[in-house]
Length: 379
Image 1: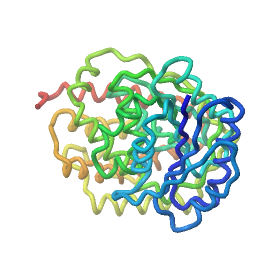
Image 2 (image 1 turned 90 degrees about the vertical axis):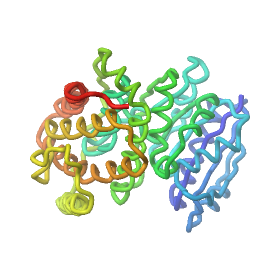
Image 3 (image 1 turned 180 degrees about the vertical axis):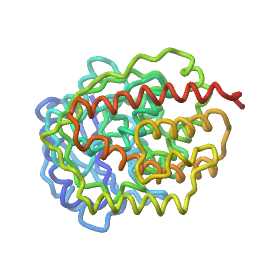
Image 4 (image 1 turned 90 degrees about the horizontal axis):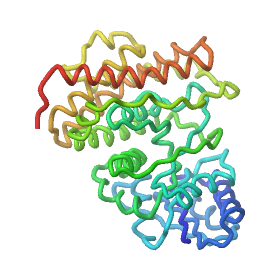
């Protein structure tokens, strides 16, 4: 049994050694007789990430690849790994900046692939109520709405998948965003559209380095890839809208033991970034400007806005430039949504916070169906 554990990286010399050790311990504890490889694919880091990885002592063999391909990014690194190791049976991907990973994660991500014959394993992490906003307000509700599949954390970054799915992934790598943070979206959408079995496993708390500096490029890339896939698969989405969807599953993902509200300065910074984005990239005319006249967007307004974007995507065949323009225009609105959500959850219980996220999925699907039926579908 050949297992390849992929660690994509960029300037992670201070954290990569820990995740390497956890992976090695997990493989040794649960799969001691496997033919396993710990693989670092690095985006030509300017620090000592590769050297630190290489010098970390392990039982299982390691290999480092410096990926200088353009465009560079996480997706490009994963694609490079898959293409180099076509003899692998199973692949894992784990973020290089993880500080909370445990050896049991290796077992939980691999066991369903091996024993239950599923194609993709995605994690369910418990999180601070202020974390995971791209997942909570965009990726997960869009997948539920468009594909009739409830995946709690479809862009978590840490996956287990089979060789078969691995070699389906490159067929969906198209745009620059796919080669970057859009890769997680590609993997999850591909698995759903190709009807691979998906299992979600609880891994507990995920802690990694603060990602706020990445909030705009990360969301923009995820949005670009999501919009591309939605437009590319619009006929399939229309079929799904005519099928009654099951309610999303309720998972206990909000953990108030780790609540850390953003500082007022951070809130103001998000607000200023959003205003600048909206000045530079105006939302399209189909979005009612009255829905975002304030610096906060609440659940009702956000589901209406997002449903209008999705409706436009599934009614019209768009080119790459049009899709990129749409994605850029929604970034500022998304940031206003994050601020509105922060206000919604500031003084409520964990259960009520979960209710907001649960009901947001249901409301988005309901509104997309309503908006879609107003006009004629275009080829």
